[in-house]
Image (cartoon, rainbow over the protein chains, first blue to last red):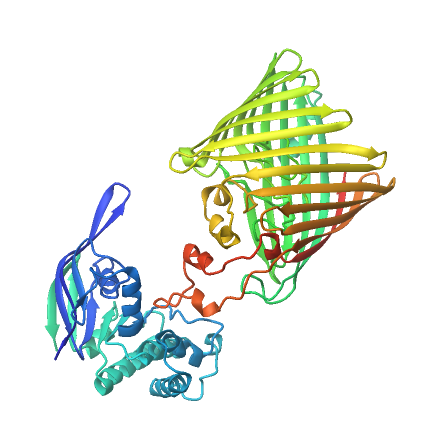
Length: 228
Length: 409
């Protein structure tokens, strides 16, 4: 298994008034291809901070993040943006769908940015939406879909670009238990079928049940890292 | 409640008290052009506004002024730099919140606010006003470089009342014509960036009023002069303000204007205006709105050089027509403001008017380029505005028409 992402000595400080808050304290971690990782921990433990640093959405105070062997530290913002577009997929708690676009157009958005041609875009989008259980709903706008269906569109958008790593921040937090379970099963299936690598920041114990690796953070440090 | 208390005191024979007010209704309609900056279709707003004005005087040395404003809105107005705002429900930062808001079903909102609540204490040669009050400096008509506390845009439909600000004001009178005014006003918080300190002095030499201004306006040093005079039958005014920000380049705002009556029923006024911090390139206009003069100090024009001309013609003793134009000299765009006003009775006016933006419309923008490719959210304003290059200032504005009804008692 190749290493998709790695962090070493990762530290992130935030200045709040006169106080410096250390959100991450020298974290070392490697994510392997095909991992289905749950970052668990209480609020303020640093899991979302770690996720943002893995995604190049934030810059570390110290330490380094590498994606597929390339250090983000040495990249310009434009290079990081290209890397996010081409190699990373993101799933957000509140879905972040573009309300004026249909499900297919939302899923197609990343492919447009990647410069994929129209025919291939259409094929990939329809196949991906079918993979997430939304066949026949391609032309619906977000306000015509349930919360679970909207998050499925977000999953389709995240995987449509064939990223090396999918980062999901509390993807089930806005969903009821049954819908959340179904979504997790879907992502697990995508992980097993396509070998997609997922990292979740989550409070949801259900994620722990389906993850093959659970990393627990407390006060900005990894206190356990177990495969199951 | 306060007003009733004042009336009760008046009945006790100690006070002179009065209660006045006005009722205003406005209907505005916006006709957007096709662009991502514009709403997708024409929209209308209806505003109903009631202002109760209570005033009480105790002999010659105390005056209490209280205004309470009720405002009801139906529909959403497009607020692009204050353009087309009715101006009747503008709120300045408040030390003490004296307002309330209630949403009624059907898109109607009802708000109430105490817009004036101040006490004037009068001693020989000194007036002290404490509390919520209107604060204004300078003499500009369209362009007001010295009006540094909650100024109105010239594209405001009704500018009868500036929003009250929480302030302490001291006016000292020297001789027959000299006056020094000091103001400390709250403008958002108690830091230097959230307060206004101003000192204004004025005196008269012959037919000319001369003034000097010094202030610390939201942490920026501002120095200014004012001149009001007359050349023959033409009144002349000029305001100049030099702002010296601590961490940015100094800039100058200056207006020179005149007003005259070529006939007994015609009034003509004009102004030339310069603001050196404005953008020379229309592509930079939207970015300017994020900078301090626009974001915090109420500057509403984006360019550098302007002219304004207005002609008011009395058609009958009760009916007058007004045509104003404001031109951005550098990009060639213009704002036309035609209006008619009819005095239905002694205390009742009806008005009709429009704001017409003339000039190049903004170029087409692919909306998807305005979305962050990672978070799928709209880009932050600073990046967003760089991707919507405007082609002219007033060509950016949609056509707005309005009707107003005002009754005073």
